[in-house]
Image (tube, rainbow, N blue to C red; front, top):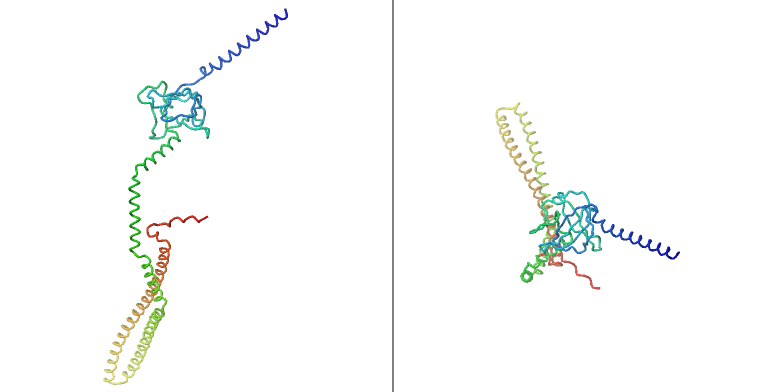
Length: 335
């Protein structure tokens, strides 16, 4: 009797356990169908490798849904991805103001769908030639596809270049440059210019130039002394005239006539001395100006000589600077 009771209890326990397990399986399976959410579809014109069913859908990094199904679009060109959005985002907003983009999760290779606001005049992908089963969210290319597209464009540009013609023209140009340098006899020209610079430096530093400057200075001093002597002479003449006037006041008509003649002569001498003074002052200014100009010219000649000498040294050590604005790269040192 005890054995039958035990078997009955075990049977009841198994039946209840199986019923609970079956109910749990059914509940777990139906939970996805009973959960809140709306379906949207996006069409991608690129590979969606790494994107799987139940991959997250995020709006600016916030989880709002998951990928429901992935398949090929009816036009057999685009990839159709159905998303289940659990957020309260308006369907019109998703269709008119939002764009979907594939993004990767770190370096794992897994992908998710990121929803972002559209940009002005942005190229987006829409389905063409067939009707979508759900409201459409337009897509934009992923960052990885943009990078590969840019690389392909660069290679297309290189392939479009006529490299053979460019190489041939460059070779001809280098040959012409070498021929021109050979004909120019650059070493001889540099030697001649250096000789000229040495002669200019010797002229600037020679005693003749110093004597010329000293001669200008002495001439200016002599002219100044002449002006001083002329002033002294005029003063003496005035004193003589005054003395004669005192004699005239006690003398006769002849003395008055002589005094008048002397006075006229003194006036003429005065005018002549004033003209001489003006001439001397003008000459003095011209001499000073000429002296300054000569000194400035000699300084510029010496500076130009030094600059040209440095240029010739650079050209002799780096002839390529005649053609290029920068120095060629240094050769690596031998190990």
